[in-house]
Amino acid sequence: MAFSSNPLSLSVPEPVFESWLRDTGYLEILDQRTTDLHRHSSSATTAAASAASASSSDASAVTNSAAAAVSISNGVFVLIFSHIGTLLSLFTLNPFAKLTSDDFSGDTPSWTQLFLGSLDSYSFPSSPSQARLRVHENVKRYARNYTSLLLLFFACSLYQKLLALVGLILCLALWDVLKLCGERWGLEQRPVIKQSLIRITQCATAVILFCTNVQMALISAIAVSYAVMILHASFRKLTPSRQSTSKDGTRRVLRN
Image (cartoon, rainbow, N blue to C red; front, side):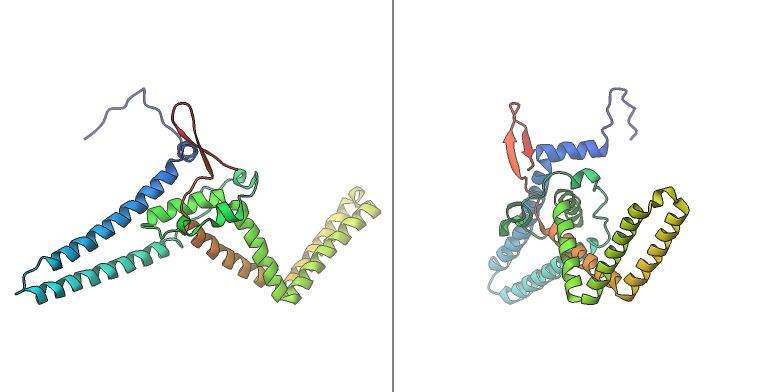
């Protein structure tokens, strides 16, 4: 069935529509409704299986109970494979697809109340679509927290690898010496000499980083922080910071 074009229809860009959902709090409602629907469907299936086994006659009690047990075991296997598929889908999506530079501006969300939250703030995503929704939104909300975790893990990896820490300090000191020499010798007036010293410093930095295995410390920190970010963002429910109701009755989310 074909629909005729309506000249009065408005095309709303996707970022504007998502911003409206985020400001009005409907993203949190959608996430909560999806979780509740999955919980109710699972409980209804279990209750139906229990009722079917309980209402069987005495003559076929053994057969019906065995069939109910097989049905429940099949449901458990389906649930397990569904959860595995949801976890595997986390590694196929791009968590930074909707991340912008504005997400790094402003204050860092509270680590205890907002980032960590309580035990009720976490639940297993019921579907890959819900996991994708949570990851994209939570990465935008807690971008500064995840960046701080990356720096923390990198510092811990450097602490465990003292040689890499020494190499990083040497590289920083080398560039600092180049800056001081440029200001004292007036290299701004000698661009050829300045570019030559910069190239030499870059080569020396690459050699030092390679010999001291700084890249391995950075790769391990990125891997650990990425895994923590994906797991936290997918299991963390979409809960608003603070909510207020405007005069027209619309829910608005006020972020710190």
